[in-house]
Image (cartoon, rainbow, N blue to C red; front, top):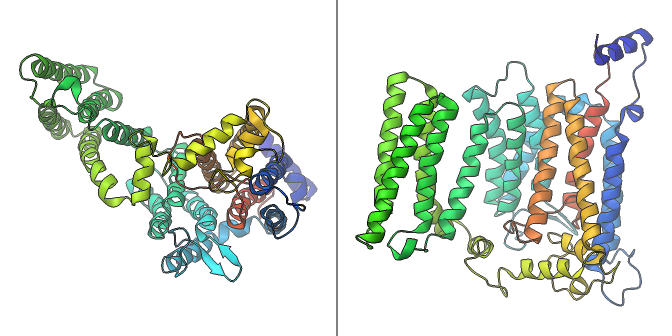
Length: 499
């Protein structure tokens, strides 16, 4: 008899249910409180203006942040007082309410910084997209935790994906692409629950194609007419397809045939282009090689009836279609400011005075902090307002400037502790609903921290998402509190005897 069964037996014998307070994970609550404290200090430092005499005044951002923190703590308490079965029972209802709210927000007449994602209720501004995250997490947990759900069945996987994609589409329609991208973090949970690694690999491959293809599209190979970007991407498509044959079809011989044929033909064409006809474009031959590869995969699929050959075939065709559509999407679908940000990130445009200004100033602020920082309220870049959005999206630059490398590392360690703790709590859940919801929360926090800190350091695109518990504002703070405390309440009920 394992430890879990012993606990349940003891509960039945004594007929005493463990209390919520006794079952709460106080380590996670301690990390939450620490992040709130350091977050307020950072907001105070980022919004402080020389000459301010009262940082606690409600007329200041630091004063209002105390209000948001206080209401968040009250909200967390209310969540803990509710029965944990409430979140399971009403998951779909909550999800439906926020879907309707997201849809209505599309037609919101109030546009703030080009986005229609804010609802203005007098002096109060709320962003439904921040609250829709926990609603989506509850709905997907309810669906995937139901009896008979199997993520390996396309029908079930498609249904689960639809639950995630639907709010994404509504948020994109609000011109809030950054918030929509956060929903991609749910695929980390899918992977934990058994989604094939090939799906994540395909996503990673698409990112590689986009970056290399766009960045080196106009760079020519050894003064020939061959684009380095197209050459590398098409070669990678061939190599990836060959490797997948070995991984999923367990046929090393066919992998070597495909690999040597593609590399050999490409090498011959490369030498021909360099030494015989410099105007010869190797890309055309690579496209022919890809067509032959597609025909080879199609033949093996029809001959062997192995579905894995079909999936590899779909990967190869999809890779080529995605690559050639990436340039169109960048130049014709994305908004001008999004296009400029990507070009700046890839090094295609410097534009220090334009789209790259935020990141450039943020890097200066972080670098000026040195090892130990300049001290609380002593940052010059932030006090002189050189960094736009420095108390919201770029709040981490304040941490770097005032607390230095040591303070920044400490904050990141706190977030790491939160992520690891969430992973531990998720794995100890006795039911799929709690485990799945826990990994949804973990994925959302991980995505926010990675992208926000990355964009402040110039490592990821500037997509305008907040740093959990640090960025100024009520919507994000309430949204993250809801996410975390609902999971803590579910975890607190893990030892209850269900009758």
